[in-house]
Length: 349
Image (cartoon, rainbow, N blue to C red; front, side, top):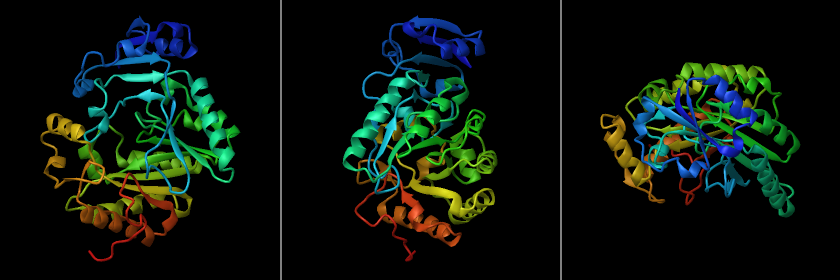
């Protein structure tokens, strides 16, 4: 899987490094002073990930925990994300990572003790002024939280941390069915695994190299049976002539695996791009039906459907969810304009 494994010199005897070297005995090992000295220094085409990837193992420097942008999670509580990895083994053709880094190579950071200390500091600082509120921390901003969890070995670390941080919540965002490491842990009420789901035909068209819908739903069912809390992201939502029936079917299939009252939240977000990422989509996937969509520059300079179209789409899906028994206060709009009531249902179209 990895042609070269780059390891920061101070980590050469790290237990996780030794484990990964055993898993990939044919990969070339190169010692480096710092990931930043090598990763992305020479631009590597995004689609080269189809043929070879390199792996970087090192320590994250600088700010480890960052405040999440508005509309990142349920309203009324603060949201932060922490950085434990860069890039993803999957190839979603709308993914912003194709325009974010100069390389698709995988980076795993191993200084989880330092990341944990910063999480504790952020939580302590916030709770000093707001003792009655939960603080959310999210993994998976620049990577998938579960896809390489068998390599990173980090889940046990964060389960121990959040067992201690009872006034905080952790979200593991994923499209993966790699739940083996997760099932080794005892479920915690404040550690939520959230799956990104789309209708089956959209996964096939857009979520390249990811597990199909049926497999993701099976993983959700297995976790529910074991008592793990579940969240859902319908994101990105893409319009086509099957839009309404395909989401009605998706909700029905989901509720066969988990009852509505056990879903902690469902986020809704339409497909969106920065200008740079949209240009990468045009270059990397010129035949994609994404390019036939009618987009405009929206309130935050991202490229989206126009506002009436977004409201209609989001309203239709929310109504489907409400009709199937999902509580209104468990539905939120992800990365969307806050100038209107985020729970509004558009009944006019």
